[in-house]
Length: 226
Image 1 (tube, rainbow, N blue to C red):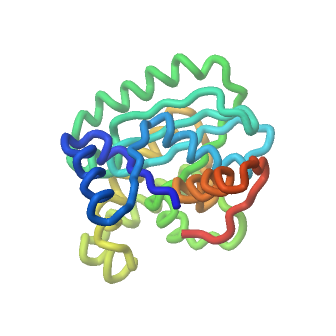
Image 2 (image 1 turned 120 degrees about the vertical axis):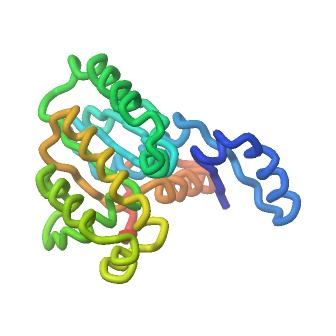
């Protein structure tokens, strides 16, 4: 098996102690991974869906947002920002983090081949895409994403659970998460976003297979959506 903990665990004061207790009581060994390692796992999941164009991969978690830039299947730049759906909900340093993303964009954008296509992973973008009722393909435009955000924001927390069939934790954070996707797309002038329906768990499965089989798979498609 493979078990990994991300932003919340690596930044908590007692993260390492919690890992020790879980190992002691449940015989489950969890590795706390860095933002860079998280990006590596995510890369394994999305690379099979890329061709020779330029991509900006956006993964919004609860405590951090991972942004990776690809030229074809090659990751040429990556950055982890301490802003996720929960932090956004709590209003922690929102403007400052968006400014940091903008500054990072200015450093890397001069070398990018336009246009830049966004790729979104994470439970919130998957749910928004599902709500779009797309019949063909796996992408939605920035305008459609903004419209979906406006649509969902009209529902109360309880209505999101009862009518839109969201889990409680999803209903709570989907609006602040959508703001991050929208803002990053604006900064990189991406007109639409691909939503392949894969994420960190798919990258972990890929890594587990490579570890067991002792070989790399360059082109693997993960079946199913979540």
